[in-house]
Length: 243
Image (cartoon, rainbow, N blue to C red; front, top):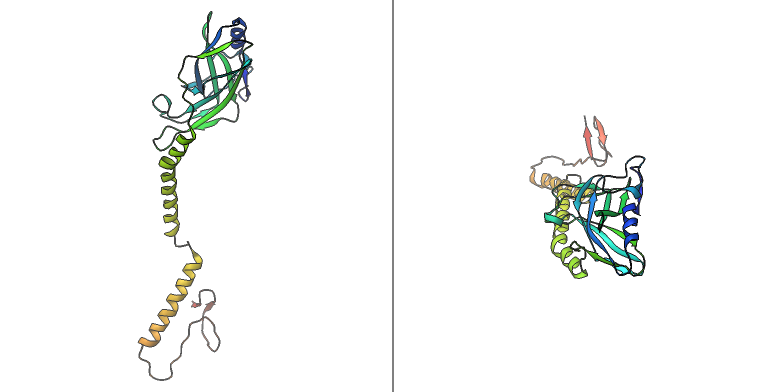
């Protein structure tokens, strides 16, 4: 079932929620992301851990809404010292403390054949992936977390990051593309055609006025063959005779 795509509360998660009584809290312990998926002939609800864990993730502060917990799971390439190599993010898990079993995975998400590639950390940019999570935990139950929730960026943070970090990179990359384009001999064909025609006319004028001619002067440009007899092939476009 490596092509499984979905998000489920695991068996351990259901058992833990069933143990909690009114007034108790669901204590979330960590969030992990990985590259694996549900093993062949496996059941995602029976998953006890990620198939191929890669790194710790984070989330927004969980919000308790009647009988559900809602949060955004987030993985950022700058977490925990920075990601040193890229990977395909295909699965993630939410973990909590079970008083009888210890830490268990209570929620499992898998992107199946639609993984998302996370680039290695770079000072010039942070790669971010977010996934919404909703866990039904029953009435009058609270939620606590035992990891640092650090997923939020304010609108001011995003604006500053885009203007201070990303905009100069975009402008630099755009200027490189412009310079590469302008240096190409095939760039701006209309302008180059006008310049070429102007060069030809200027060269003809220099030839006419700088050459000492005796007798009856005449000029042939091969723009037309009217009144001219030549041997060879007339290249009308290039205005020349080819042999």
